[in-house]
Length: 111
Length: 116
Image 1 (cartoon, chains in turn brown, blue):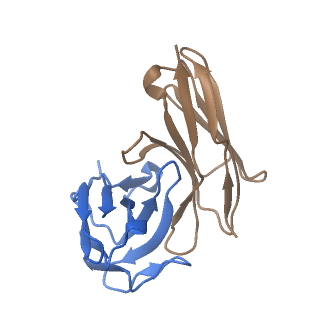
Image 2 (cartoon, rainbow over the protein chains, first blue to last red):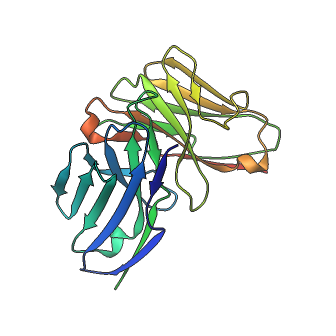
């Protein structure tokens, strides 16, 4: 079966750094995505990792270890607007490259 | 960038009626469209994969006769919820893969369906 785990909720302070972890066990792997989703809105793309290592993009960085089935999203210099759900998603190399999502991590940024 | 237009954004329908949701890729050809459903405070659950010119592939537990998917062209995919019931009330969202896989999947804006 397919399984993606991430913490349900996290709280952090404005200006701080937060790391959201994701572990996955899937049959087939074609890359891992992180998305941000505000309540009632569509997810927006943050990052994509297909090789091991760290990808940095502004205040957001994403790390992947394929051997460990592990990824994290690092958010620096947190802002209030970063309060949202963060979805870890794995693209499979089967079924037309369909993507399955973790349950999401709700991040609350406090002043 | 790649844009997927989805409408309606909100719809309220009576129990027993059918509702059609459309997703159009505006500036690229989406040979594959994915349909998801999201209940409050839950993640996106893949319902089906829609392929242009062929039958959709449904995930386990999704009734293909209730959720009709049509992908008649490279830019249009539709999801019809037939004989809707209150338990079908949910957020339905489509996504398509852009040409550049590294840019992720482009999502439509979602449809909030309420069945009364």
